[in-house]
Structures are given as C-alpha cells and as structure tokens.
Length: 210
Image (tube, rainbow, N blue to C red; front, side, top):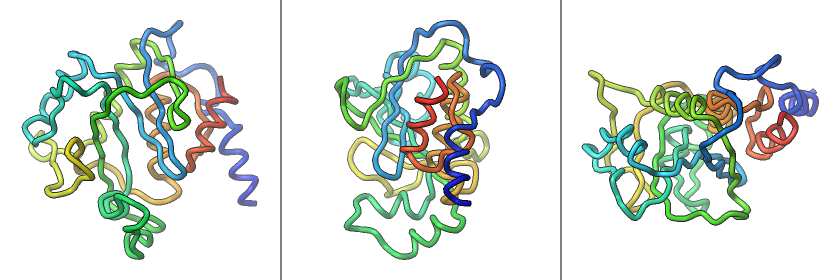
C-alpha cells in the first residue's frame, strides 16, 4: 500500500489537468533546485530586483546586498531538526521525533557563490516571468510576520551567510520541506507529482510531468 502511494505521488500530476496559471509560453528566468538525500532548496540568482524584494532581511543581519553572493538559497523545514542539526554528527533524538510527528516551521536563507552547471546536487529549471513572480510570492507568504515584520531566530544558523526565520505552517515528515519546494515550483508554473515527500520523488516527478 505504501509503495503504491509513493508511485502515485510521483506519476499523478499536480495540477491534474492543464497547465498552472504561471506556466506562460516559453521561459526567461532560470532557477536551481538543490537536493541532498533528504532535503531540497530553491536557489534564485541574485540581482538588484531580488535584493530589493527581500531588502527587509538586511535589518535582521542577513546580508542580502552582499556583492559577492550569486544565489539566494531558500528552504523550509521543521524548526527543531533544521535548526539543531547542522551536520549529521549532531543528530539528536528529540529533533528527529518532532520531524516524524509535528513541529513548528522555519525558513532557512543562505547566500551562495557560483554553482557550476552539471553539479550533481543542482538542477537548472526555466520558468516564465509570471512564474518567477509567483514563486517570490510563495516564498514571501511563507514568512511568519508580527506587526507586518519577519522574525529572525536569534543565534541560529550554520555559518556567516545564513539565517533562520519564523515561518507559516506546521511541519511533519509527510508534508515537509520537499512538498513545500514542490508547491513553490508549481507556483512557478512547473508541474510536479501530487505528493513528493522525498527529493528523489520530486526529481522523478519533474522528469515525468514535463
């Protein structure tokens, strides 16, 4: 039964019929889908438009204006596991338990340099201008806000260029980081599988639903 659900999650398209609203004709924007064994991120090429879009993050110590940064990398996930597990060697039982049940969510933003074509962890995707706008809206709507302002998580981060922010939505293993990424790609006009909780499932669904 579980195997059947996994197969259906990949092969049943979402949206089921027709194209997404932002599909458009052709494409003029390129983004990257980054993946490891359990997690996916979306990497957006940094330009003045994108820096202006997320300019408010600078007030929280996130250097969106860093001239040496090439990509803004965005991911969504469970607070305990994401924040408390920068490396596998630091894995703890409680964050794993929360990831397998229900946890609060966070957004993780990082700045990256050049990502060469052909990198095994990166897949280049082309989307329309309308799709790009809707992807930015998807990311923006994922920030939890208090009095209209985003909330950075103090003393959380993996290095000098990243930060965690409070996010909307509850996290669990069935509707987690990879389903959030898939929703973002659909907002951008791409078709994915109906349910893709694992990075490889999302990759397969993008191949099938082209």
